[in-house]
Each structure stands twice: as C-alpha cells, then as structure tokens.
Image 1 (cartoon, rainbow, N blue to C red):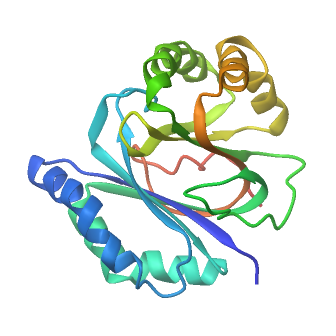
Image 2: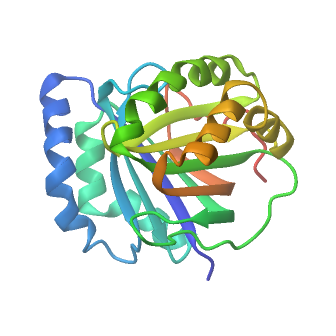
Length: 234
C-alpha cells in the first residue's frame, strides 16, 4: 500500500451554511479522529481574493488528510457521515487525491507525508506550510500581495488557494502547476524569491514544511468544473 493525500474544498453559499462550517472547525475534530483509515488530518479556513490574504473567506473551508491508499481515501470521502454532512451543507465541493513526491519539514511536530514516487514530468501539486512568528507577521503579510499578484497572472498555475489553521499565523499555500520547471522558475525569481531570502536571513517561521505531489484523481467540481479537466494525469 502507498500513502495517499487528499485535499477537499467545500464552498458554502448561505450565511446559515457559513456559520455551520465555522462551528465545524471545532466540532468536526472529534469525528475526524474516528474516521476509518484516516491518519494525519487538518481542518483549514481560507483567505479572500486569490486566497493569499490575511482577510478570511467565510465561504470556503478545506480538509487535508492522509490515508494508507487511494481506496481508503475515496471510500471515506464518498461515504463517511462527516464528509457527507459537509457536502450536504456545501453548494460545491471538490476533492483531490495525490501521492507524495518529496517532502521536508514538519507540521505540528509531525512528518505527515511519505514520499512514494517522483514525478519527473507533467503537472504537479506544491504545498507550503508555515507557522509564522508573531513578531514577523506584519512583515510577512506586507510581502504577500506582490507574490499573490504574480502567481495570479501566471498561466502555468492551473489552480491555487491559500488556507490556514489559525488566521495570520498558520498558513498553507496549495497550487497546481503545469510542470516542475515552471514552478521552480516562479519560486526562484521575483517577489517570491525575495521573500524566501528574507525567510532564511531573518528566521520568519517557527515551523515550516514543503511538499510536492503527483496528481492521481479527483471528485466533484470547483467553479462549475474540475480544475483537472484540461490536465493529463494518466
């Protein structure tokens, strides 16, 4: 068996549904611990605009989880009562399944992603996660608009969203790229490269994690269609 990582997004339309989703950020934890075959998991809110802003988007929430294999992941997300409740309240939902290519760093003191293969060609997912030092938070968020503007205009970004566990301090970026070369070019140039240098020189983060994934499959839609509709993941 090879570990599979799922990333599920849920969009909530009405204010009643949004309040339900916000409350579930606390209540869903108890049930998630009992979901069959689930290992590491995180509940996240999202940012507004491109997603990479400190202003929360009250309509979009995410669940990231790891599973022993694709069958376990698909079975839980399609049939588990908690995921069913999320889908019932949501106006739209999308779940992506991935295998880990590379991973370094820690998340809540754990190393959640187990590399199983290396994707040398084709589209890939990039995930970055960091716990920002409170004393650095204002400096960090001043840099984000420039990075968000560049990534928003990049035609090689097939999908992107910023999510987080705790507003301002615990941040996750999630993006899908046409290939590794295009992603590396973005990371090593412009405002993103400048921010990375500042991270290293000034020690912005208490904890950080970087991971790349190979796309396996998806369920549902986002924005009316699957973001993978034009991607060859065979």
